[in-house]
Image (cartoon, helix red, strand yellow):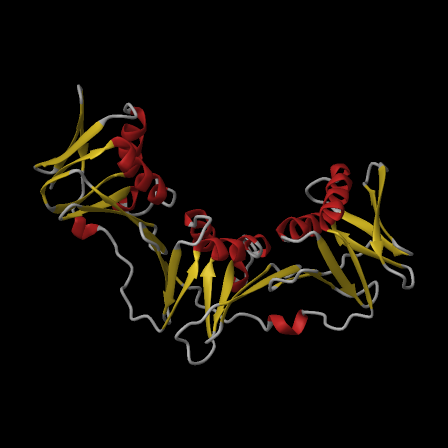
Length: 367
């Protein structure tokens, strides 16, 4: 394998795929990238055996096709350290990879391409195409609600539901829930469910660009694939059954109010100043045209915030983790937000007034 490429052209795909590389993994080859050259197309692939990322780039001078694995971190560091206008020559020299640019020369150890573990190439059962910008918005409005280290595997991921007319993402950590639905056609003849691991969902969000460029989503019983023009993400799915999330969404609450989303978020953020990471429970008092946030911490420090809202019902006082509400308000892309609940012991349903398919649920906390 031998080819030449501009430094900036190589750096972008290197950065796209290097984020999941394991530095101290059980398999030494997982610290490497798989480099495959076919014609003038170079494909760089990384894997952690659960998630696989591939990026494609056109080289300027392809002399010999081939494939090999090379150290990801060292190759990235070399590329970043070279001048911006540098041209890089990569060539195999027996079991070593030569990297040359100007008067700089590096010789890197390699491992055989056959040792690199590739995720099983299963048959896709469903497929749909969506704008990258729309998918990025869907992930941004739901991913924050995923659990990080819950003993229930399905909570440490995101549910993707696909039917003939829509794509829905659902995430919950047991205390809050976020869902977002996009109207987009697919080839699914019946509802299909896939649980994407947390790491895979976050990596997919990182890869997406704002705008109308398409991304094709597909999947089967054990895998999920997102394919863009210059990169591909393949992930194993969480082998678990997702809970019946519809059952916990409170509908037809007897008390509701409308407020400015930014004002509510800022009030909660200021209230959170007094709290530690372990304790963030504030009192939320809903009265005549007013939503009050009262924060007290174990040091007996005190703060009070008041926001004007559209509400004419009976007074209600309820406790919430203020951080959960900040996350929800930050995820809403609307000027006004509607909050609906039944009483001081019920979860609250939060939705943008200009509803674009997003809904959020936050459970109350004991004061």
